[in-house]
Length: 127
Image (cartoon, rainbow, N blue to C red; front, side):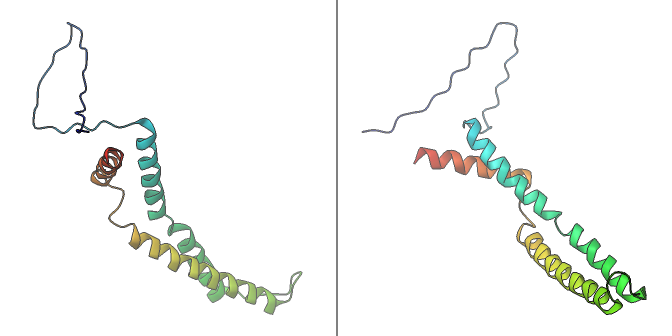
């Protein structure tokens, strides 16, 4: 079987101006393909800002450890200090992981990546 030629026809009413620019590429795809690409892009963009929360927590915990004089209140002072040390270590690990994700997604999520992803999804459907 020969390859079918895909054609797109648009019916324009008489009250519209039509300008022809033949150097443009047309991308024809379905709504679900675009939603899929945008969801992946949204994940990349939100991951780029994920370092802010653990960074703030690490700074807060470090300042608390450096300046606080822990007292006995419900728990002993040594337990409070241990809680803050463990929290600082946990948030530091979270921060390192967030920086890794930031570096991984550094060049992703711009307009050209979105367009390239839409085109690759459309080409995948043709094959």
